[in-house]
Length: 250
Ligand code: PEP
Image (cartoon, rainbow, N blue to C red):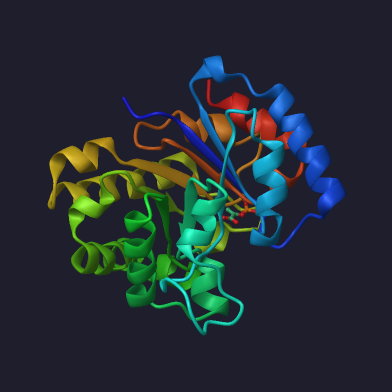
């Protein structure tokens, strides 16, 4: 049985006061009895604030990115050891904004994946196709390559505790969501691809959906067999919207 997982990606949003209010509301509303794991990913400068404020809560937190290197002359970067200092549990890797705006390659993403696993943190590998790729029926080829490049570099065993986020690029921040059926087809194909390497890992790995998830579409997405939760951007900045999405899992 895969535990449902809902991750809020705050991107480059928030400030001390807003974070305080958001965390206070979501942690008060969190009901651990529904079995859903909830994670928030703040900008790394707020990691200390978030770790303090969630210290008594079951809500976990993660980072939006990390360096593949342990330490040294990498201005502006944050290492896995630094994240570990704050008991950070998850790291998003290969988000489409990192791939497109920061030109992160599959090789760099795989290097980061490996560093994150070695640090005992859970990687969330984000994959997804652009609109042009979907329209030219390349969706699965694109995603299969994004996954196989990492598996071949780090080995399938590194996926034992990993999470995959399917995020069609055309659905991120656009208000346009993949239909539950479209998302389910891709999630099932990802699981089938992983099964070619290791059936147990394929069955156990959590594959979450991201791309304009909101309180209205969450339930029909989460009902799909191979959708184990959501990666939520915009709606995770609004406490009520985020709580409603988490409640939609049931
Ligand atoms: C994201 O940032 O990963 C995301 C899915 O954003 P949004 O929910 O705003 O589309």
